[in-house]
Image (tube, rainbow over all chains, first blue to last red; front, side):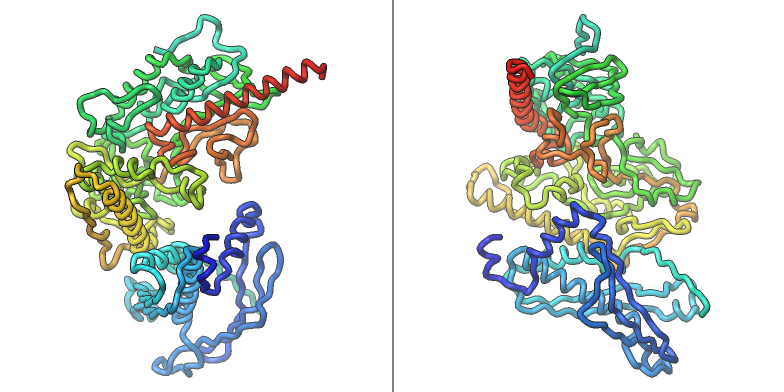
Length: 188
Length: 432
């Protein structure tokens, strides 16, 4: 740890992160995590999802509390708008992942952050999900993220932090690369 | 050129060097200087992979003035030029001759096993017992082709950068080049110029200009000390060893080969090839970020050079500092490509290489098949490895990088042989 790092604090325990990296390099089986959510239809286009338990470090783990999320569609789709749309949740996930990464990378590089705000925009052509035009994909056609960052660093250093955060971001990877999705169903 | 000893090529020897490329020959030089008895076993001919496993137009990425081996330097008329592969082969064979290295050619090693107090080495040309082994069989033996290649439609021809020779061997029509190191960019360049439209899949890469402030970039990498940076002085040596080769080409006249130059001649740049699903190639949406990372890193290198020039106040540097245009990324990079449409006839995997250790029957490989070593000292008594990326220094896998690493590791081996010999001597003396 350099002396510079002793004076900066972005609230991220980089020592713990680096320790975890060290430990998981020698014990790759402990690095195998499984994230979970459960959901229940709540009528109409409204779904309630719960995030509570996950698996990691070789055993079941639990959040400090169960987190509840409502997804729905807006009133212009004749829905009741009891929550954000699922695709907006994807933006929430991306914002959370990239910003956490920025804080961690800045801490590791000894850079004090003062404020980090982002605006996320995703373009989507509804002709895809509505089956109007088979050449239009269902998902986002593009995602734009605009960060405004105040930090004790040069513009280039800040750009490098944001680039490194993207490079190591799980949600950025999930959005930008294909993932195998396996859906099964049973009758109850 | 290779000296065959009069006695049969087998028996006992203090050190066996596996591979007669620049690394093995450099090590032989230092062992000879210490009068340490050794033999160099070479599966083919001296400088075999340089002769047989590279494409026709390839030239070294480093200029001639930089080409050197212990006590042996480039002496031709074109110090700023770049050696072709036949010239590299001549250079290394010339070195083997003047250094009188004890090379046995045509001796393919099929196994190296622990056999106290050393190793048993079985080759197609004799069997040996040795106290120490130098693994100098090269870092670039086996093409590393990703598993997703298995999903490539059957009517598309697949080649690796090792099989590729020249555009003439390719069908007319589109070519997908996967990989954005020096190999991927050089192949994309010459294939596009041959009239076959190239799509280039680009992941993380290292961008740099060929010439900066009037000098070859290798000159700057050398003077600012980058090439000599040591393995134990970098934050994350694992990552440093995985950095792809810089996007450079050795050409006459000198040229910068980057993604902008390729796009100017019509190469279509897409993101990393993430998957092939139902015959569709899917490219990552990370293209913008990998280009941003490469531009930022290039600018940091240029800043380091400028800072050095300012400190040195060298009057020979007459060209002012310069910054290059950011990498152009199209407004909407392609995310998919139908490989069944006939547009793409060939896929070339320029996705890197890994060493071949199938003959190494000593438990020194990690779960990814990489040899476990610290600065070339392998995790087994009396075994060292040479020539891997960033083995001891950033220049380790370059031709001119062999000398310093081989000197260091020959010192280690001399110490090892001395100390084990004296221990054996003591054991004998005390009757154990």
